[in-house]
Length: 548
Image (cartoon, rainbow, N blue to C red; front, top):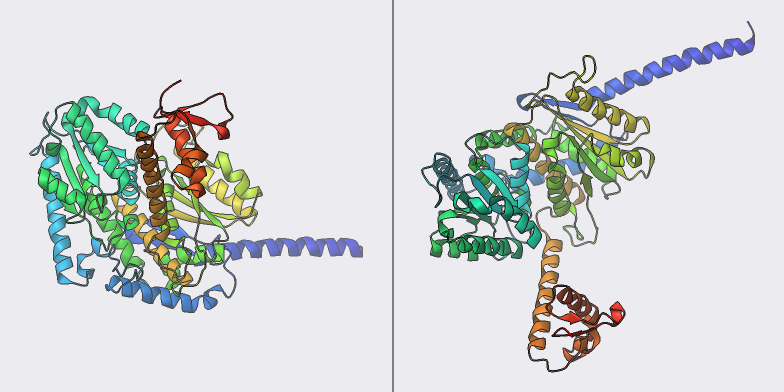
């Protein structure tokens, strides 16, 4: 046999051995980084994350700090130093964790109150002015809307439950679309207004719009209204004075993005006859599992470490969340708020500028893998994927779309195929598997990400529980609203025939705001509050108070 043939046979033999070795290594890696959470029938697979050989040793001090920080948070230490507040969303599913007896009692009494009130609504002991309540209209913004919307969309409504609709913006067209669906049924609609202060513009505006609709139909609004707010807030005082049906408290130690297990989520869920006890149970079970100090068996710690490995602790990659279940279409939006509002911070705890964050995108599989998996696999290497699968559908189909294959089989095939296609080109992914989607598993899923966010925040030394950027946006919006009022007040006494953005800025002594004044004048003209001279180029427009 020639030397060449011997060499070729040796190469072929060793390549086969090498490939077998890689397969064994892959299976070994999978077993190491696969965590099955038996009580919840949920699993986490981080085996497709590129953990470096010494990653866990390098991260050891950060891991210890994260466990210590979480223990201190649950014990009631000040976890939000910027606002000098405790952070207590873990107490909501285990009252015994509350650091003070009065908080324990408060939570217990509140639970009884929620159950008693919602039972009376569902059993028709409390009715609307036109009969038993059939619809639930939830008015809120941010965490006061996203959590309840997620629960409503993801979990089947029981026959006795109210049908929920949401107003979560100050868009008049959006409000109109919701009102159009229920305007004939306002007399059987329960209105739930959620606002911590009662002065946040979006829920306040929604409340005023809905109240006007009730007034137009001569329906007594107070007989249909429930408030979830802080004690003695503007909304709380209004609800007391007008004798609304019920008031439920919010507490300053619960942030909006972690309020799903508070009255914010529980009251609307219970009114839809969603099993809130199972929701709480799932979160409680996950909390127990995520306190485990054995890192490889702690799903929240492994999730946070996977984020760190993918982003190098600097937000280098974005996270794309792909739930392969239509009922979880809102979950990526929910995670956007939970993760980005918590981790997107300019300053570290010691005051250094760090510009941290983890950008979250996503929609649903397999629909949206047709939209952007092409780039995730072959384009910019700037993302990692979190797959979420639900193994058993709520409504299984016996239809065989191909021999021995159902629609659900195809959904699973698309998930596994997309995951394999990404792995093939070394694009990282995480896979979360739920056997069933129900109140218990959804509660566990939310609790898992809540703790992962807390751990990751500790890794990068930022405050996960404040939101200065959100407050800055609110202040900026207030400035423009005040500027519009100032413009209209000035024009009330205006005696000239025409004016421009520049002349108005000069008259108001606001030359530095000429651009803003121009934008507001264009808005006012579009809504016919003033009129624009159409003969001039846009940026040279002049305006008048009456149509010429």
